[in-house]
Image 1 (tube, rainbow, N blue to C red):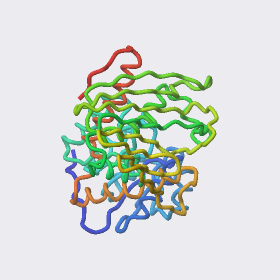
Image 2 (image 1 turned 180 degrees about the horizontal axis):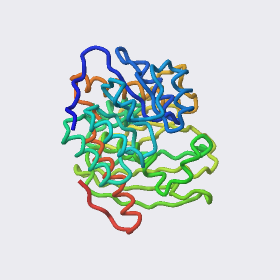
Image 3 (image 1 turned 180 degrees about the vertical axis):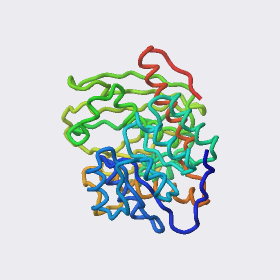
Image 4 (image 1 turned 45 degrees about the vertical axis):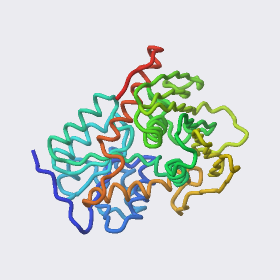
Length: 349
């Protein structure tokens, strides 16, 4: 067993595991960071790794992940692969004392995520999760407004991520997932619910499948009972049904408090309504040349998320989405599946 490697104060050497759809944007986000060198990229289909390496000037391309981990002199690896492979790659890195950043969902099951976290903990290796959704500019501002107390004590919230966007056209592998929506967008939305409203104590979920040619669910409705007494309704769907004002991938939120309401609506408008009237302003995300315009608000959120994780690795402020923190989101995801199967409320936390 290798000892955890000490993170140098200067350049951070990052190895990338996976060169699929999301990796291109993740790598672009890392390139926005000062003092980061993309030292290697591995992919099982090495041609994809070569294309990614050529586009972004990555130092080395590997067809063997263990060779990259052994030879790359890496400080951290970013695992950007299918969830079923996360555990293997995380453990391979941790065995060598290399810190790990893992994409969501952290594990293919709650037990899997717990085992990965314990494996890293036993070896003194950092396990962080790239959970970028909460880093969206309009969501950060919404939370700031709510935390200011302008609407008083919050008693109910609603998070809506419902879209007619054809997600399967650029990520066809999603059609084959036995568990789709809750592990995909649910990992994000339920994490936002925790971050914005506190920890949950109960979950009640209903799911549905609208697409006839997919294996998993594409609609989910989750009701969270939060420990502070707030109720949060999470509405999620990629059912593909046409919508008059398609705003993928915007997330809408309504927060009800004893003195008013805060709403994040289409086109990044935040409206605060109290007895003094309604005050509105638009809070758009920054734009990056490498971002896909269809995913603009999400791709922009990669940059502050990477910065937060980088600061943690360099010994600064603790990252928001450590493995320990994200495990609570994973519990909500799989608690939702348990509730949908049983039809019962599931206790969590």
